[in-house]
Image (cartoon, rainbow, N blue to C red; front, side, top):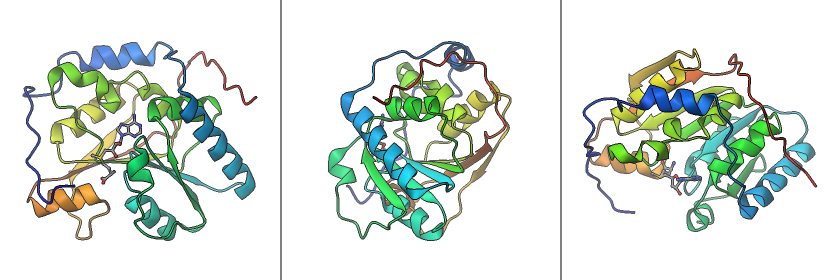
Length: 232
Ligand SMILES: C[S@@+](CC[C@H](N)C(=O)[O-])C[C@H]1O[C@@H](n2cnc3c(N)ncnc32)[C@H](O)[C@@H]1O
């Protein structure tokens, strides 16, 4: 990874003009794309791991990269189970320190994993989404998590979401997207001393402003026809 980075450049001057329309459309429809086999295998592994660990609060570290933050979360919350997910095998397998017993690092596509977990009615205690890829071009709204068809499953999973980003517009849009679910989010500048992730460290070194969004989506209820997860 490069030592320094430039701020996010976008052709958008404010929240995407179609944001609320797209978020509402996804909220009211079913995302039926078939699951990738490797995501299903990762989900089965996670399901079994959680069953073996018994009934503990669950923390997700989504887009965890090399899992530095996942390790930190697992050490800070020994009473919880922590699952870190990233689609990059290369990143997830990087040796960046011991993996605590209460942490499972998995390679999976979250577009699948979120749906599988929501359909299995997992409920999260906390959900970290630290520095997701910004996809800053206006045409790429659908690749940002809040503009993606899987967003309803992210909300269904519940818990307290903590999103961090170096692009304030990403966080603003995420907050607006949550308003479609009647969820209020707190958005503040991030003033942290110790970086939680390699990307956070890189942005800090580059003098970039960072943002933190906190939202409790536990109480969200949504009528949605689920397709059901087949464990066979
Ligand atoms: C900018 S990096 C941030 C990594 C880490 N959170 C950090 O702050 O150092 C974004 C990460 O999201 C992961 N990612 C992007 N799309 C994903 C998806 N659909 N499923 C799982 N991981 C994904 C990438 O592989 C990458 O590691």
